[in-house]
Length: 290
Image (cartoon, rainbow, N blue to C red; front, side, top):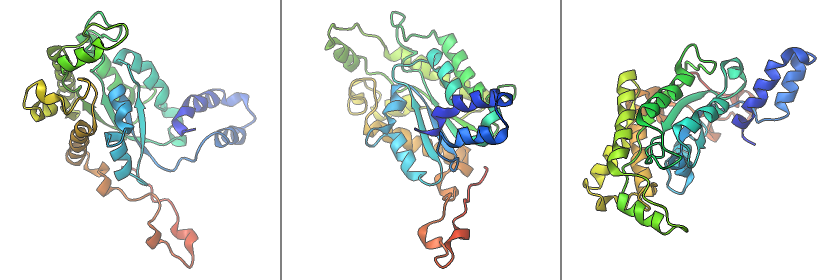
């Protein structure tokens, strides 16, 4: 099981530190339940659009490939979630400051919400726009506020806007359900939620990947043009994920160049860098703090 799933377990053992027989016992419990803390990570936090990033050609898959042996990619995509539901889950997925030395550091956090929050009011996924803005700020504050229990000064943040909606395609897809579902999103409403993310980023000096505008431009600013990019009118495919991936890498290069995959060393050396006659000393971790 992957290490971040054990973060609540770590918190539990450290909170009850005085109830166990010394530091060694605590470490033995931890070491018996997790992989070693060797690589730091990129965490992707979002809804089904993020969860789907593991699909063939998805942006998460491509990030994992280019960052292999440098940073792990942790996908915390939660299909169907809005920001209101994501906050308490994120507080469980992100390590508190008191255990930071025991777990991989999140070097880059990508926050991608809005597609579900922008549902119309009849949907249980709907989050009013002012509350959505408040929630995006809260998600940012969890790792970046110095007063937060989860404060992580080395974590960098990138925001991503929801993609545009093809209301016609989405309506057709919902109409085939049993029973049929009424249209739940509109083009203009989703645009307003995308703009809210841009506004938060601009106000706080946090880079934003404006996927809404990029895909809308790629579609020729027509709903019909979105069909090759959003097969069901809502979710990305390989083509639209490629657009996102390219924008993410550009944003990293421009805003956080020290985290670009070309600037990071492999944590463990390439095979031809090993001292074949005396391999041990050359196989030490080259993990760095940036």
